[in-house]
Amino acid sequence: MPSESFRVEPAEAGERLDRLAARRLGLSRNLVQRLISDNLLLVDDREVSPSYKVSAEQRVEARVPEAGLLPEEIPVPIVYEDEYLLVADKPAGLVVHPGTGNPSGTLVNALLSKDISGGDDPQRPGVVHRLDRDTSGLMVLAKGEPAYSRLVEMMSARRVGRVYRTVVVGEGLPETGTIDSPVGRDPENPTLMAAGVGRPAITHFEVLAETAGYAMLLVRLETGRTHQIRVHLSAIGFPVYADPLYGERVPDRRLWLHAERLSFEHPVNGEAMEFRSEIPRDLREAATRLDGSFALW
Image (cartoon, rainbow, N blue to C red; front, side, top):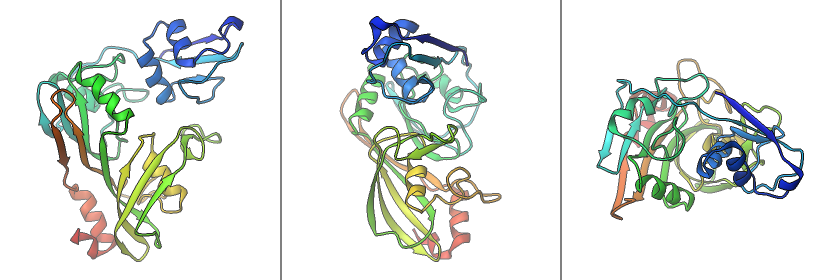
């Protein structure tokens, strides 16, 4: 992924980062804001917000995705589709869009033939939110304007309902709870995310079932930071089962996290839309091995 950088001139001190970077790099402000959100645009090697006020002599560096996407025949279940958007049920193991180390073979490549589009990032046409590689479940993608801009606005305004099911390691959680802690790049290990730093993040959870050493939860996102559920649950001592980054890797098991429900108003006609995805077989089997009662959800 090509990198571009510049030094802040004295006359530019005090400007918003997103406005300055858009002008100096020749990019749209929307694209710059997404680069910041994805930690692809840093100031003096630090993660900051789009509204950050720059200082003279600071170094701004951005890694800008390259164009050149090609459609690929990758099976992805489509739950809903019309002329404005589609809802896909992403399989585990599939990266959402091309990036470093994943130039192809992504969800975006699989859905290009469905005319997904919208936004200024050529590597992320129609993508308004993401799921981690090993997280399965529901995603909505746009098929051009005005659906794309409207969906982005709805995400920012927290008007898109996203509910996940997960199994965590540990016992003694309250029946319901809220984790309100920022999530951002880990200052000691930039390849990971951490709680207590970065941008505001809020996660709500409800315990569905408990057994010796494990609990099954419904989790509702109020915000959508990278690895938010995994980081938040690990931070309170209940990491997601088989999470190799924030918990403990389990041989032959993948991350027990599934985007089960998705709800929003149609971005064009305002119709209330709600979708639900069945728990994949591999997660059902893994839960049953932990405790047979988990099969009774």
